Image (cartoon, rainbow over all chains, first blue to last red; front, side):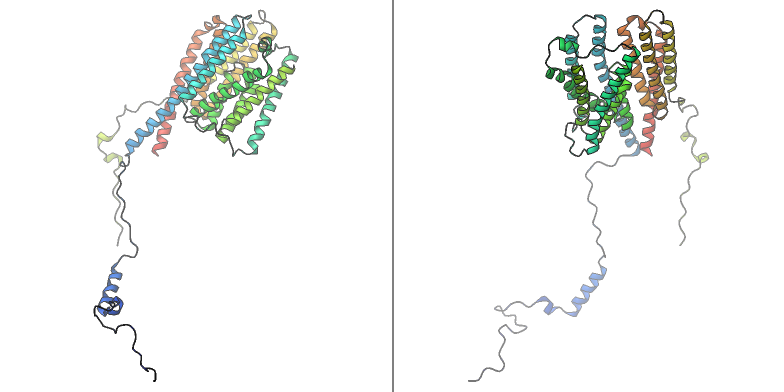
Length: 291
Length: 151
């Protein structure tokens, strides 16, 4: 038996439309007229389809006069911050004046009690204003992770310089025969305070609260109205003036405040300023204790 | 194909008269920026320091008189500095000057209540002058910011 020389293919023959077979492919039945129609359609289509703009559901754009009014309101709100800063400054100034006058006119009085009352009142005031203006302090208590070496070098070097200038000015005043203020720690040492409490009261508390008040609240508010440099100078001068000594203002208060404010502006955090203030005050307390 | 002609811009003479500003409606702008008050204060502070130093020599200890003179000269120097700064930023300088002025006179009054009456007219005049200048500086700054936002 010889094999079949012309085997029949397994699939159905072409053109077979019987129900048992597969339907024919479309390409297989495309006529020349269909191909021409496709070519014509392709030539009529645009080269790049432009998407239709989405419908705008937001408010309509402002007109020029509306923009003017919005900007005017914004400026008015910014200048309201200046009034708030003045109110804050006055709120701190009044107890300080009362305390200073009371201590000056009753020389033999218990100044430590008055100082404690004054400190408590001022810290309470600053806490109240800080709570009221907490938006200005948002993010200010974050640790400055990105602060470079320059910032930390300034934190260390600035208190060293200010303490040196204080010592030099005291030395010069003594040589010129000028009266030097009473020792800073005399009331506390007389009351038998331990050193840790003295450091807390003179170094830690002012560093925290004064920096929150000046570098946090005042500088933050003034920066909305002035350029950063102007706000820095105004804050530094206000900080110096509120200590009531013109000589200290020039010797160390304004330079310290300028550096602390600049570091606050640069890092966005109050920690470098607080550390500078703390190191300066702690250095002065240490010198007084050693003396 | 020729370019179309741009629309004609009406000349000032062709605008209707109702659109023209009324001659007297434009407000008169204040001259200067008010920092002259800071200079006046600085000069008066320096002169006052010398005056107190000279007149209190017999009644006060020499060291105390020197300290008073140094304090008043220091204040005068601060005011001179603020006057220089006021050329660039009058609002900030005037605000700082007013706060320093009020603070030191209040402190002076607390320590020596009789000093409040001394030169009261000059003090009140300075206070009014500085406040007016601050208001002017504020208005100018606001107008400048509004103009900047428009352009």
